Length: 553
Image 1 (cartoon, helix red, strand yellow):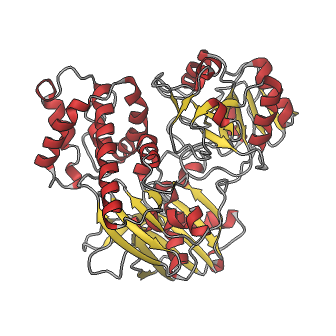
Image 2 (cartoon, one colour):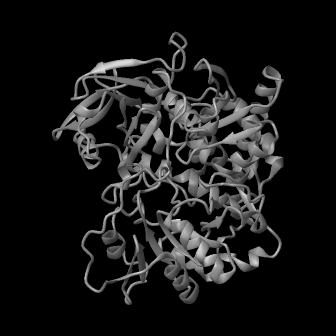
Image 3 (cartoon, one colour):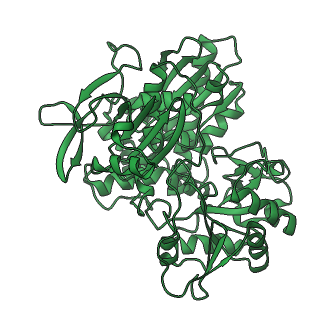
């Protein structure tokens, strides 16, 4: 049984699941240096992506489309796309289930556009089911709670029973839309948008980019817990605001900051509001679970864009409320195509999805510009070069990672032993100097470098430096002393493991810098040619070949 999941709006993508196994997932932004958050665009892209994997539409048993929508002229729910170069409207399910639906997994059916009778599930369902099915709990046949908090909804808690495949809504935890943090931050420098048109593509891209940047910027400020009471009062006053006015809280604070929160800088305001939301989320989640399910021993999965906030994730995991917490590398809309295909898989009787984080588009070479030369270079030789020359290297290997974070296959890696490396990496990527550079570390050595240093293969939780290590690897230490760690098991058969293992043997340090390899505002490099034309580094390594340009970098 082959199921093709499609996300047609922003963060567009195409994924195929065959008999419970993810064959691939292509995010549109990762094709041809696409813009971040790119939509599907033309329906022909589905055929093109299938063809790249040796498939045709006729090989697909069921097409499924995610329920992120606008309304057409007749008021029906649809996504604006092109077909053969002409604009059409692709009918889809609602964003969220309704009280009269057949549960959160209500199946909607439409026809046309070359997809025959295609199915559609709510946007919330794709986060709910996609994250659960990809979890170790599904693989072990265990029940789990799933917390879904995405841009246009308040945080919603569900329960999935593995044996019966029963999915039930537990409760909404608090009246705050997921887009609230980004909307609040966008009322202050340095995140003021350059347009007030909330329907424009430029505004939407800006809004989607703010939360991750502001999470880093918050480290420049302090959390003023005394301001929590002010936020409580404002929330009570504004609790019934619609989602298209979610920025009104920030407007109110910005207009009255000297009265409401005197002496707080923009970074203080952002840090404080982030901490305020995280505290409330944890309190409401704890109350809901302990009051209604007091037996304990529960598993939790987090889905939706808010599950990328490592501060909130870390607080939930450290609370002790849950036996185990899991977040996939694609909890946001980058995983929507996977999630919507998983909804159909789940309804047809399978609960566990077999998947690999390296299931994106394959790397290619392309045509290198003049000045670049190529020579054979294995992973140990590359590790020796990193140690000897203290230079960043673009590493492009195998299939791209799923989700928004580079995890070794589309990365710029570099030694972390000098403070200047963080500045250099931010310079070549044209990023603000407050932005952190992530560490990648061998899993079995992570506890000696980081606290807690527990396995974190997808950069989902926060870690702190063990005594003495901040001085040894200063390039990966954030302004607040934390690190957004990626651990990598030495048993994995990847180029990154071999590079890092060899580097640890040569240098005695099991850590390297790891930041994404991409053009500014674009998805990961799809080929060596793109990295070479960018020219930000002297070295590019791909599939056993080192490409060098003495004039680059």
